[in-house]
Amino acid sequence: MNDEARARSVENFLSLEATLLDERRWDEWLQLFSPDVEYWVPAWNSDTEVTQDPDDELSLIYYPGRFGLEDRVYRLRSGNSAASSMPPARTCHMVSCILPVFHDDGSCTVTANWNTQVYRSRQVATFFGAYRYLLVPGGACWLIRRKRILLMNDVVPTPIDFYAL
Image (cartoon, rainbow, N blue to C red; front, side, top):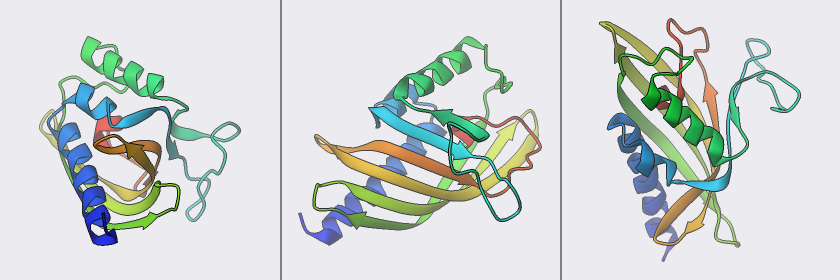
């Protein structure tokens, strides 16, 4: 596969992830992640610096494995979500400026920008930021080995959960 085709496969993969979130197809979404994924939303230390170490500094969300994401999905479905996820939100994810860099070992680092519109309880919230991925080959498609989500507008009017990012 040439670089153009590989880049298109990355764009399609990120679009698939966004679609699965918007359609609340949680089980399919979870399958996009490797079991040892690091899923991290760092907090802001100041207006210009985010935390650098999820083990020693505050994070908005941090899971050092897919089990954490599976637990979030379970709590969302069961109604035991601390993020007050009832009624379920409607979301629309937009992913843009996708820049993949391919490595000799078959992996790919990707940067992208994102914007999500969230509608719940007659209110609309907008979240936006930047994604940083490490994708690894996973059979017929990619698997997410690391996902870092930089939330630019971290003063939010509503509790936030994975489906809004």
